[in-house]
Amino acid sequence: MNALAVVFWVSVALLLYAHGGYPLLLLAAARAVGERPQAHTGATPSVSLIVAAHDEREVIAAKVADALALDWPRAQLEVVVCCDGCRDDTAAVAGAAGADLVLELPRSGKVRAQDAGVAAARGELLAFSDANASWEPDALRELAAAFEDPAVGYACGQIRFVQAAAGAAADNQEGLYWRYEMAVRAGESRLRSVTAGNGGIYAVRREAYLVVDERMGHDLSFPFNMVKRGWRAVYVPSARASEKMVPSIDGEFTRKRRMMSHAWPIVLRGGMLSPRGYGLRYGWMILSHRVLRYAAPALHLVALASNIALVGRGVVYQACLAAQLALLLAAAAAARVRARPLLLARYYVLMNASLAAGLWDYLRHGTPAGWEAPEGTR
Image (cartoon, rainbow, N blue to C red; front, top):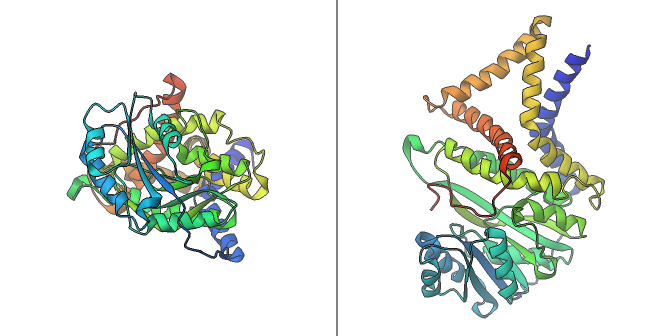
């Protein structure tokens, strides 16, 4: 086997491992370890639920009402809305809806708005939610129970993405991918800690809260930094919330591209690649779930280029090239034919492309701290 063949088979093996082998090994290991015993006392510490909002007039009243309807003693719950340079009357609507504290802040981005909310909040636990996320009534109780384990510094719940539109426009396959992702995170949480969270429903012990770079969102930067500091970052699937997903796959590509422009600074210079403080188990998770996943676009290009060069060396290489081209053709065909297998192919190709596009955006002009709500999610 020559060097080019080695390059091809290694790139293919890494792709198969990252997307299939790692989840299978992880879930097998998690099953062998079993559930961590946890006794719930039903304690209700004071909680500040912080919502960063930028021009969220359409949904902020419903969000405040959703927060106030949580199964939590009202005297122990503080609802904080942080208006990040809002150009509409989000602040007035939030106050009228019953928010305990409304901060009107200059435009500085979600992370700095959350920092301001934390500085003003009084809760022992700091919970965070997106303005368009709807929590189930018992979600806060389930999330807070995780902190009865003194080793837990961060806990995220289960977000369910629902279609925001019907018919041909609603072709986003994010819901299917997210179920796969949550199964992987459940295994990571059981073994050690999750490698990423989500912005729709999570909480942090006050003493564990981190002030991070304004371009580096909590979703990716908090879990591994918690581990480095001796905390566990866990997934609580019984703490449930829902959000509208971007209706179209093309819209999801735009959203993921923006997200990855924020993720790449964390990967490249935010400390994720430094193994210090991880231990072997968590280091394996970061390498498998994060590093190899983000390297997937490059691995696909290497596999395709080397496969083309090797196609004259036998039927195996011809079959591999046919499979790669079939994936690309299926993704292209999904723009006209709305069949589920084609839509899944298009989703996979575009989501990998978004990783590369986000890196390009970051390297070309950096990452802005501000954000706009994705179209169709409000």
